[in-house]
Length: 198
Image (cartoon, rainbow, N blue to C red):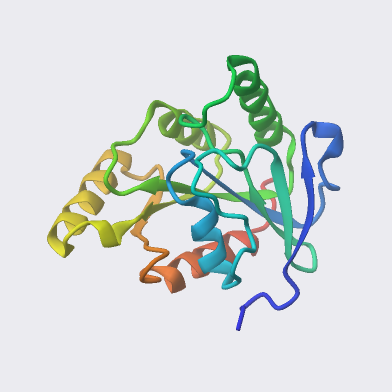
């Protein structure tokens, strides 16, 4: 059973004017298009197809708002870096995400989804730098950890931790085996309970 029995989709937005009212608290989920973002969301919320998954990377093309509890939301941001879309569309996504991060006073934290087999991308680093700049707590989910042997996964985790230092917390995660599910959900709830920065 889901730990968020009242969780439901609110709306998708393609412009700042379409965002839901900026009240309560929300946590954004971002990551490269093929990093397994939607699958991670579904495991953390413990609902199948809560966020739509697709074999074709880049399915999330809008800012998707989900309610988890009263005045607590999870935001699924457009994936970046891999989707086969026009440069114009990519620019639109980039601007939409920048507008989102700069405008939302209810934003309490960021879950950054990253394939454990890949290096931090330029986009990951830009997002982390921006989060640090606005003092936004960030937690990195190293997804697809089931694809590596235990020792390799542990080494990858140490390398990312070393690279990020105090910028973000990091954990292993697998949607297939549900590894790291409880830790990730605890971090989401921790972020949602944070008070707004003065």
